[in-house]
Image (tube, rainbow, N blue to C red; front, side):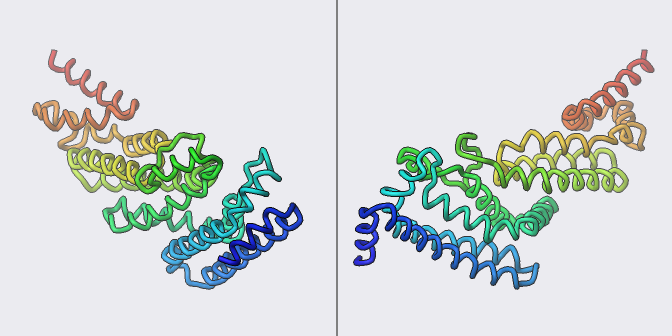
Length: 299
């Protein structure tokens, strides 16, 4: 309590004293973060994600408490001195976290995140806790400034980040989420969809292929809802539709394929085929051509 009173008294004294306290605050934050970075940077890559999540939570907890302890700097100094720049202790602390801890690790974090999502796509839903934890960290780093006004603080308190990734753009910079998506996740999704389609169109019957793609697309929607910001949903859907169905014409003449379904009046199978093919214009055109050709033969 005495230390807290001293901080308050210093904050009331003037810019020189406040600047000294701010530098002391900055030193505490930097030393703590640098200590944690030395630890994580010396560990094996297979331990990276677990340690990253744990250390980030520890760092956030430490920053939360020193922010509370030095809160008078925001009230009497930083917000006034840097008026118009919205520079607060929180922003200073998060900049240290990004520059000294996350940025040196981010390429490895992005790659490991992609591996976890690939495991989820292959059926291992146990990875979702880790995926959610990492996405939540990216999400939090992209918040512009949760302490600008008490009203926004209240809104942030009412919003549970791991339950929704759909807050309005005014809250976000999207720097880290965009970087991860554009640099890694988009290409990883293309590769996964292509490999899945190429493998299954050879190994499965046409109807099994259709059911498998529909099931995968439903699971993708579930994944998007759980941990992918809705900003990227449309782009991901277009990628999946294109690369799952770019060889749809192969399903026409295969044994038990679309032509066979038409000849044998397999209504339920044709209904599922249409449900899938309609998602991508090129594949829908293939289905239309098969149907027109079939009708011409019957005339």
